[in-house]
Length: 306
Image (cartoon, rainbow, N blue to C red; front, side, top):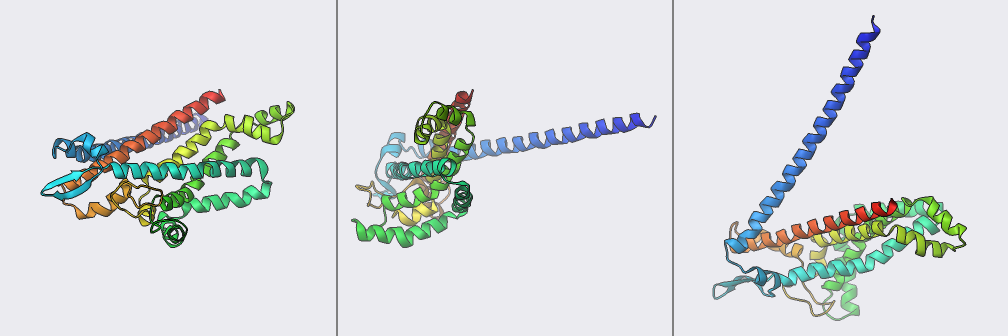
């Protein structure tokens, strides 16, 4: 007679815990969705004011090369192409350096190095991820800029310095994701390759890397996402001149460096302030594009696993 009430109490407690967990999960998702929609609406409404309120031509904004918010003779110019070009150039160049190094390091740690090698290298990679961006910028300012000034043309501040600093910053991200992708591969792939007489290098290049390619590319895109949105470290070494660079060693600016330098010196609601919000909108749209690209690559990886 006492057994039935205990079972009922346990069932009620289990049902209450499940209901509490679901409620917490749904509330968290609702808060995230509301925050995402609110941020997107806020930035979009501010950024689009440049075109609907201040009558700035969209084509001239995206492809114009003159950025003069004060203007000559009362005619301000909002040509953002040098900043857009600077952001894409420094991101792609950094990825070109970091992608082969990061993927190579992941292959070495997972397939070549002995067990102690991964135990040593893994904490080093995690340590690099946790270093603040201002430290990377200060190191770049103290070492990379003087090196560029002494070895190449220019004053040291420019695309090349930003490329070197960003490539070091995104290297741990690419390495970590690439390593996880290689670890996730089924062991039967390697065993089947060895069973067919392939060498270790043939197995790595012809079997493991192609099988893990969606995950490796996801790591590269994640690194590019961080590089595209990085502000402080790039601002400290890129020179921040508002013009198109003519070489790797020319000073230029990125979207993030212009935002951090000028946003505090504008009046809310002015054409200059709205133009900066338009630059922020471009950053937001590019972040969405990178996220969609990562999800696409992730789905391709799941399709290949099936």
